Length: 121
Image 1: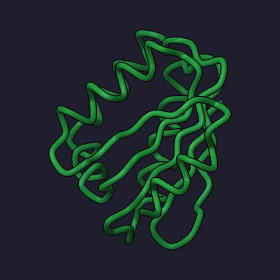
Image 2 (image 1 turned 90 degrees about the vertical axis):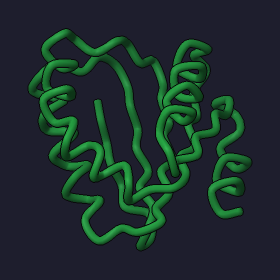
Image 3 (image 1 turned 180 degrees about the vertical axis):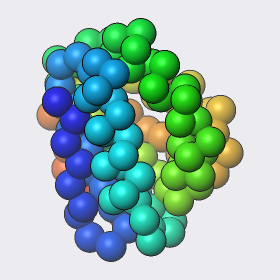
């Protein structure tokens, strides 16, 4: 499951659960692009529970949309990732180090209020 909720003018809340296949990835990326329209200096709050690696087809869809993903990423300057998976925390922090202008910080599942406060600071 990939759910995107607009939370104010410049914030998206994203919930990830389970495994994404190519169809689910295509739908999710289309929604993400659509909901990001008009956002500047945006914030993202990811809540990731019971997440599994996406299928190879889903990864292929993501790579095929890299140009639009780079444009989308420029709309955001902060992302909080809430998860209990160590590997997701490390991957998120690594991604934040690679993307100029996007600060990514990770939090435990019980730290949603702390994550939201950080997004606002």
